[in-house]
Image 1: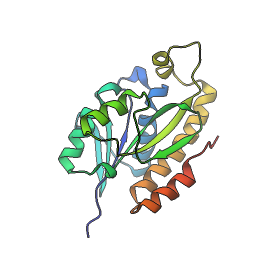
Image 2: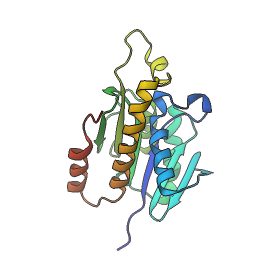
Image 3: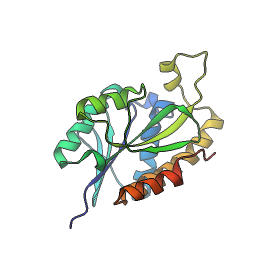
Length: 192
């Protein structure tokens, strides 16, 4: 039996002005995976793409609100099932330092997830949410998610990104629903 392809997709915005912003945490986690695996990216599937053995990596360059355009191209090309993808993205409802694996769910007001659900026609795909909250109540949500992390937050984000990277790679090797539940019990918490 062949091992199914697994795709890890990090959400963010492609321009350098968005580096180290809250909305780009998906890119930041995937950058750690790429470094750990020694992978180089090429342009494909409306994004930056890498492949090693049965692991596919994608960073959509469509901008956050159109992330589904890149994801559906990857899914169609490799004939992936929804359960074969893991989308890593920011969650304002979780405090910084918190991770949360989920098997499915609504978009929760996240435009990147909304785009993926719309174009893939399902909410049944794996997610790894990385906390970027709490939101500054005096700031508009769009301004908040596009804000750069403070120096203090950056230290926490670097540590939790490394943990998220480990969790995502562990996800790529799981084979059963029980394994996913184990991932949830191991990673669904505030680390820092």
